[in-house]
Image 1: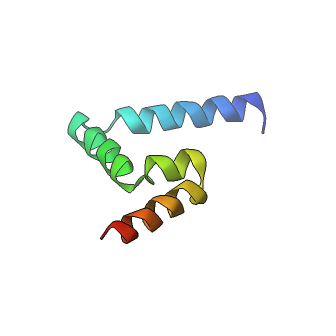
Image 2: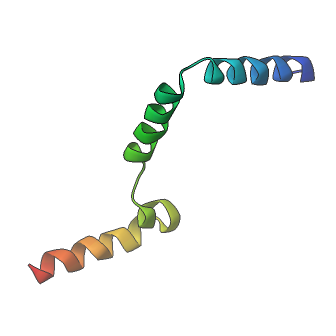
Length: 60
């Protein structure tokens, strides 16, 4: 990919993003936040998340 292609891609992405209404951008941001994995899973992997679930089940 040449530099001109990269600049063209960045410009198109920027224009597409800011051509949407502020409410639509806010909704997209909220949707991405909702779909994200839990903090422990994102930063430390499956093991701490598995321990958390294991201990939660034993308490009940």
